[in-house]
Length: 133
Figure 1 (spheres, rainbow, N blue to C red):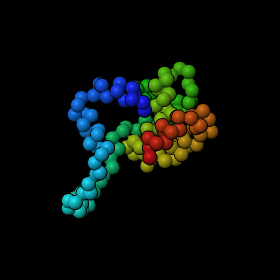
Figure 2 (tube, rainbow, N blue to C red):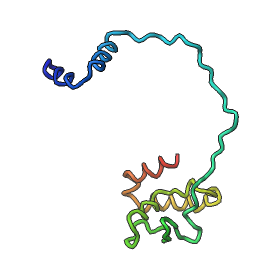
Figure 3 (cartoon, one colour):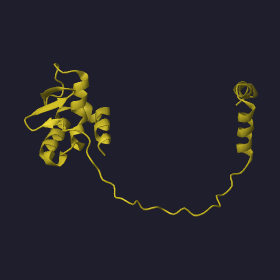
Figure 4 (tube, rainbow, N blue to C red):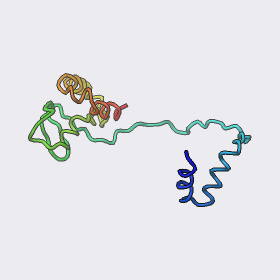
């Protein structure tokens, strides 16, 4: 960094900011000499509760945003992009009673991988998979 660049950077800073920067550069950090931290065990166990309502229904329909539509039509031109996004997002994997719909979820994910190569190789996969880890 040249002297001119340094001047034009520093001229907008408050004197306390310049002093702080210089102090931090010149002074070595001190070691923490306080008490040793002791890990605390929780008093109650963590309970996972599903707050989402199921959106996939066994009759082959999906319900989002007050609308229902076919479950396996990934690019349905009669549905809004927001509705289709919800279909691709797989919120039902973590919804209430998801364990009862494991067979449906397995079929959904398998068909999605086969029928949606653009999502499988793109951001859609990352969004859908990371959201449910």
